Image 1 (tube, rainbow, N blue to C red):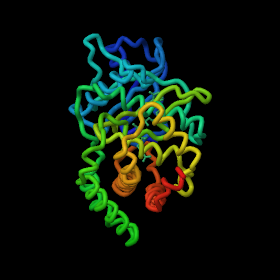
Image 2 (cartoon, rainbow, N blue to C red):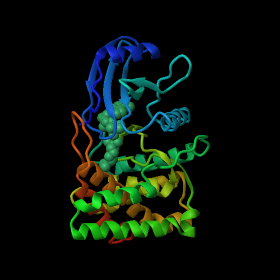
Image 3 (cartoon, protein in one colour):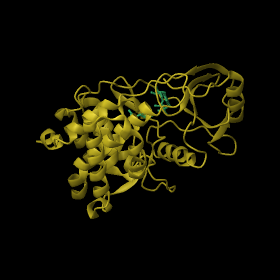
Image 4 (cartoon, rainbow, N blue to C red):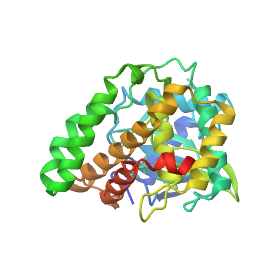
Length: 319
Ligand SMILES: Nc1ncnc2c1ncn2[C@@H]1O[C@H](COP(=O)(O)OP(=O)(O)O)[C@@H](O)[C@H]1O
Ligand SMILES: N[C@@H](CCOP(=O)(O)O)C(=O)O
């Protein structure tokens, strides 16, 4: 659970007044999430999510908020940020940047089946295409430069085998990123954290995707790698479930067929995506921040995912 900043009802009401969202009826800290402070807000007008941004700065936030606005306007089901009468989406609360977004209907599907993966794959491709004409630029802030800066901080906490794996994979990803093929990968705004807990289903129907606060401009294959590594694996082992991999990729390609260079680099992007979350989980685990309700995710999970990807199991899943 993560509530880093306690928000009083009176403070929340001041912001709701600015947005003309009615009178506060309930304010409830949200269990889940590790990055920001989130509250469910019930008002006389409806249900919303109030987010206080704990790490992101007011300079970085317009990218995320405008991107969700842009995607919502293009028919992608994402929680639209609520504007004030000047069209502003970003505010300040308790000394932190803050926003209020729509509350999506439904529940996360934490044990996804092929029926869920198919919808997610199609939605991911539609989201990539819908982002092509988004005007703002911001890199993925959890990409290679961040891994290079963070790995030395977590290495002292690892055993020798883990340290070797981490360093070897980082070296490999630096080499991939410097290659001509990598430069040819199509890119655009990506979600970069579209795990099963960042999508909602009503019954078996995908009702929306949310939590764009790691979004940035990166390769579409990195985004697909993040999704495959979470939606299409057996959680205990990190190994791929072939049926889910196949259905998700087929659904993605039904909307946007992969280019040859994307197909060739997908195994490396799967490894990159595993490395990204192994590093961030190690960082959260060994160098935690203060939070009144925080349960860090298990870093060992992404070590297993990375080891599974290193066996080349994408090819066997697609055989
Ligand atoms: N727009 C939304 N609609 C419905 N539920 C939401 C919404 N945003 C967040 N939540 C709920 O809050 C939880 C934590 O949000 P999340 O964005 O993942 O947090 P963090 O940014 O800290 O990682 C989610 O798992 C979900 O249950
Ligand atoms: N998905 C990441 C954690 C990022 O937090 P989120 O709650 O915003 O998804 C992970 O699983 O490590």
